Image (tube, rainbow, N blue to C red; front, side, top):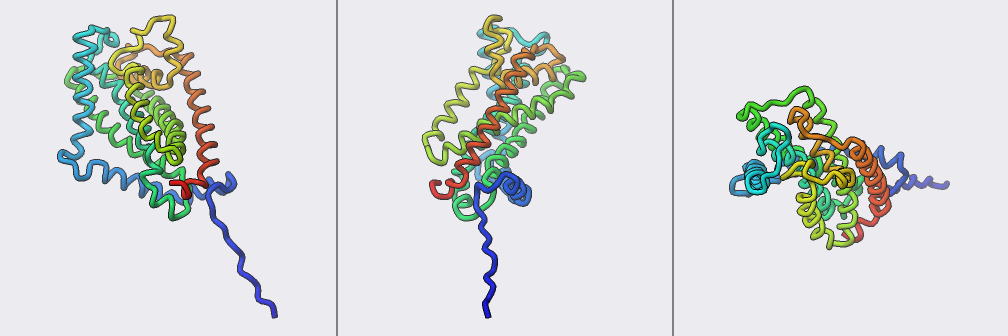
Length: 278
């Protein structure tokens, strides 16, 4: 009498696309857990705790207002106070830079988890980007208080703010997927990301407005998706005083979509090797 062998079940990263996205939904609980864990430990064992999320944008706003507004005497956006012009740009930039940094280091930071059990690795960088929304909300509260104190409130354009936030989110995730995957194999990228963020701060219109860029370079400059996002935040919050190079912004969104699609493809390609090399 022959005994029937039980079916063999093999679970591994890099399976078919349909099954992979089903697994991604099935492991949504892990996504929530990782995001909540990172929120809890972000400022744990720090002296002033969550106040760091308040101090950084305030100090940066003061420095940029003094350097670009008082010393360099660069123009503000229309009749808006220079401090609000700067903080309206810091709002999306700090979200993007923090999300990019966290996403890039997420796999290496969760090496023990990645190397021991199977789950769709995409959960790790995606959850790290979500965590940056907490700091975004804190900076948004600071901006709201400052706008009330200046008696400079936004108009109906503020309803467009979520759209530009989504673009910033997708941009951070798209670039973060590339850096996260590359950082697993080439640890040099952990030094490259802070450099990219630092350079990007000065190449994006955070401490100044896009109007100071010469007209012949304005279109090329606006191809940077974060330029359009920052201008979009200012346009939404500063009663339309900021201008947006809409044609370049549209091309920038297409570049982000291309970066995201190639990033996902590369991430999925090398995902099955993470546990071996991390």
